Image (cartoon, rainbow, N blue to C red; front, side, top):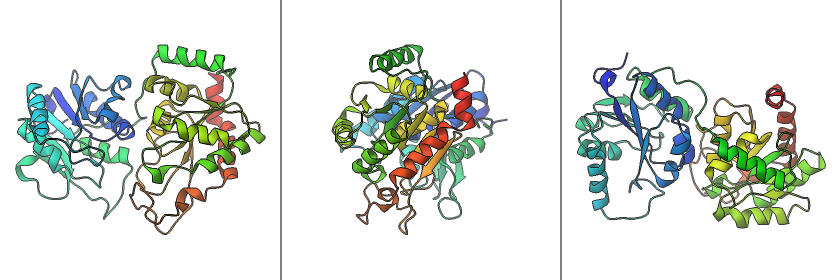
Length: 364
């Protein structure tokens, strides 16, 4: 049973103003919101990066893209844009707003936006007393008393208003046309998508989360020496130079999809791959959603974004400066990733290739 008012809220806006991976980690909570009220409609208010995920998330009906000025990724823009966003929200006549945040973020700016939009129910984690800005405040124990997985944090938030049952994988639906196109692309490159092959994703928005390019090249050489299967690099158009730098340092055959496929086809590639190797970035969450075994090169910038409900190997080098939450290594050495050995990467990939989960996937 939902909390008073929420049980009849049929038109809800979910606020998550971060990037694609953050949106995906909210999908189990969104599923719980939908299941609690038959016919409930969910709209996502998010960044342009987060909006790209919406066509692949079945729990969502619509999206509003907004670069909020209180988010670090947003460029400076006129204060009138906030008023315009509030007007756009008001026009949708939402019954409630669920504001998803990481523990390092503050909910009141988004709560104020929803308050100005006249949304009658407003839910969020909040350390300070928001008074009228929130109708449903959930005390935030993080990071002082505990640190939860990001997915669990969001499930606990909607659980506070009686919306439970969303436990399960992240959501990302691969469209059949994207899967067909990706199979065709692999065939054109001489790769049999029904046999084992490895997808490697070396990019990440934050430099502190990127395994060094020379280490990627060394890991690829180690995988090739072990006969792990065809190796394919992926990345956005902005990451093409990085991918080519890695390929140049490999001295072994490695294919590239960088800058050549959109998000739908990247999701299809991740779903078809036997194993994915990735930094801690959005595509790693797509792998979790699709059940693709994952080697996660996990920079110790934070501790709440490990993979959710997917077989994986978490690789990092422990450092005294762990959990710095910085986008650029403040110590300058990047040891939490730079000291991960290439053979550790190859060992992790090979162990996943032989795992029971992998055997079950190949038998399908």
